[in-house]
Length: 308
Image 1: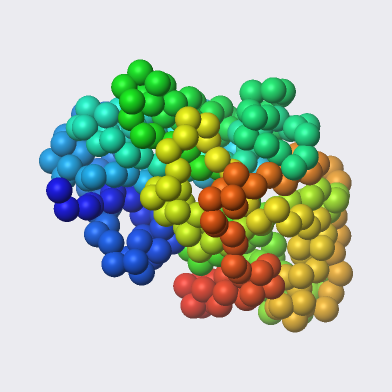
Image 2: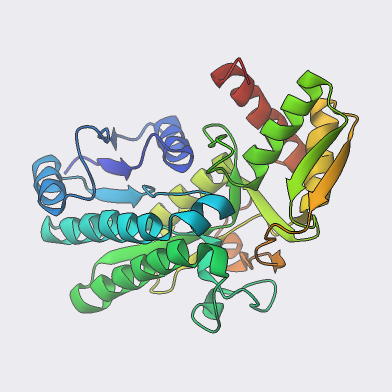
């Protein structure tokens, strides 16, 4: 059978990067627009997969957002993500698709997990309250893949990325993650010649960032080489505080003002860096440094949103 890899969520930041990587390798990619297939519709998903018969699936579809979106829309984040992933994974099984890669998130791990976080830390403690709804949905996705592997012998495995950024990111301040939110705020402050930029939280949390093209390379590498029961981490293993991240973005943008940190707003998990040694031992490693990655993200943002 001719290879055909369905990338679910191909218009998102992660999905579009995976499509770029696969096409760069000359591989056949299958996609479908949201308007033509609602992944929340179980019957429609089952019929579509049966009709198009992908040889494998890379599942990058999700309802995503930052602290504000997760904290204010808990039902949407839990229900929508449970629906789209459950429908897709079960439809793959019913159609005889034996290979599926499920994309999760580092928020699946306990808020105070031992650092760097190993895959074995899953379900060993309480989650970060501000994004537990999304985290619970992703944990269910991991376990569902493992259940199909255990019960039916399917090769359904999960990849957990750290904080991602890059071309195609969401720059809506009401729903974006920290990197695009800071880029947009700092660029706007420079354009308007403002003296300060307000940033949520204390600025002290440590975060790990990975360029989405590096993740895409890791996901495709796992698609071709990883067949184990346990999920696998994919991160840069380099930490930076939110304050220093803002300073890095300001240096790239050319903003010379100062930052005001609103400590009344939530910080989220105080520190989060994952142990990605398992994936590195398989031959993958990130190639894009933070400064270069920020520059490429800003270039994409300026082109995609010329009015800022």
